[in-house]
Length: 100
Image (tube, rainbow, N blue to C red; front, side, top):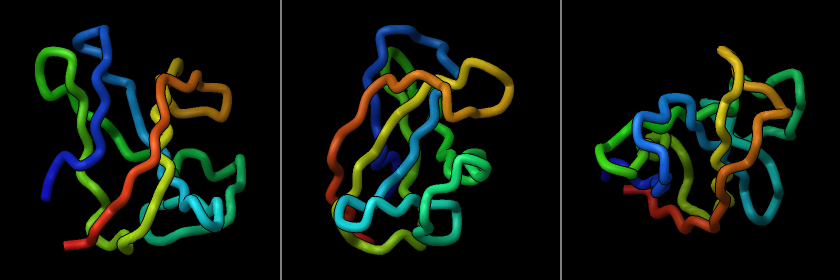
């Protein structure tokens, strides 16, 4: 599948939206290779970039090696050139991922 992570956002052309995926049961966070304990210093490794899908839709593919499970997807708006723990939260939702 593709574009499993989705956000409807009122501002079209917003290129700095990203997701952070957290395991609902352990609160660990996806770092690009696996689930790890959160560390503020590693925020850039937790970023899953959303792309403008046209209109008000922004999407990202689920990481291919993310295990099936229930996750919390938090979408942030990067204010600066690099992500920061102070970036404002735009939306969050529970997501049941079934690995294909």
